[in-house]
Every structure is written in structure tokens, then in C-alpha cells.
Image (cartoon, rainbow, N blue to C red):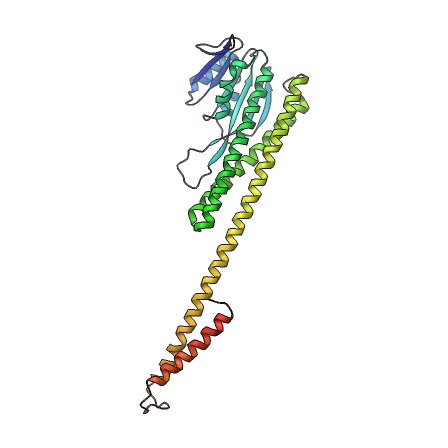
Length: 312
């Protein structure tokens, strides 16, 4: 689906066709004829439009026929029905600067473009570089917000795990860990992209715009550091719980082994006195009580030994 927006007297207006200074936004569901239409009407290489559909596309920039093409990663909630998938994933946003328009292509519905749309009335379409940087800013803010949500979920599931030791909480922590892997990879790539944009001045930024880009690089580095910290904390937590579970299993096995030994000794005594051979005191009126008492004594001695060793 193709959306056309224009800033008229400080108001965001959706228009029916492309105009100079308009923002063209392509959102799912996509049709091949829409790509062809936008490509021909705005003189954009159609590969630029198709590249954004690849969810694994890495952040990069490219110049072709005076059309600037930028791909950057943004976070979004994962709508997968698989319970083992990550809570959040990262998807590419394609930003294309033509002669008179700015074009964005989103493979999924995402919050960064919605936030940009809500503030589009404050933008100046003639300052396209600033509009690109504002999209970057919304993406960085989205990463920050999702990282805070991830940290809150992590604390919640860890607390539940302390109380219940259920597998469900461990699986939820693993899903958070997968989300953090996506975030760390995307943030590192975004940071490299922004640093290259600053070094090469691909967009032709002025002094104020370069200062804003520097601030965005710092914010991206901060988000990357947060993601790395949360990843390390979660990895340490999962390792600690794995050690705790292994230790608990060892304690259970010790108890079961001790109980097995204690129960096997009376059985050994009874089996000896049950042999079809002559045994001491077989004709005694207390022949039944002798093995019983002997079994109890042996069991008590072994139980005391195990308790001293703290196997119980």
C-alpha cells in the first residue's frame, strides 16, 4: 500500500498522488505493481524498493543516479505464534531520497514511522536531511523503550523463577536472550552506519545536522551498551540457575542413593537368614527377632553416618 503525505501550513495531510516535497510511505501489504509505479514515477531503481523486504538486510547506504538509499534496522514486537521465538526482532527500514521527495519502505508495521508521522507537521520537507535524522532519532528512542521493557520482563521472570523454579520462566528468559541478540547485532550495525555517514558526509549535512548526527551516534552507543549489559546479566543469571538446578539434582540423587542403601541392608540381612541352610540360632524361639533387630541396628548406624555427612 502506498501512502502520500504532505506538510501544508503545519498540518500533515494525506494526498492522493505524489507531489514535490511529499513523503511517500510504502507499508504492507505490498504489490509488485506498486513498486513498479513508484519506481517509474519517482525514477528510483526498483532494487532499492525490493531490498527492504529482506528481513536480514544489513544497514548500509548506496548512491545511484543521484538517488540516495539508506537501510537501517529498527525494533518491533515479534508476532510469531511459536512460543520459543524472541519477543522482539529487528526489521529494516528503507529510506530513499529522490530529487524532490523522501520515500520510506517498511517490511513490517513499526513504531518509528508512526512516531515520525505524528510529528511530521513539525517538519520541513525541504530539509530532507533533517527528516532522515529525525527518523534515525525515532529508531534510537524505540530501541531505548524496548530495552527498558526487556529489563522489566527479565526482572519479573527472574523473581518468578526464584519462587517456583518452573521451566516456563526459563523459557521466557531464553526468549528475552534471543531478543537481546537481535538488538545487539542491529545496534552495532546501526552505529557503524551512522559513523560512516558522518565520516563520508553521504547526506551533505550542514554543521547543525552533523551535530545532531553525533548525538544520535552517542545515543546509539548508549543503547548498545545497555543491550550488552542486559545480555551479560541474563547470561550470568541463566548460568547461575543452571548451576543451582544441577546442584539440586545432585542433592536429590544423594538422598535417593542413601535411601536405597539403607533399604538394601535390611533386605540383605533378611535374605541371608532366609537361606535353606543351617544358620545360627535357627531353633531359638527368638529367631524372628534376631534378624529384625540386626536390620534395624545396621539401618540406624548407616542413617547416622549419612546424616553426619549431610546427605539428608
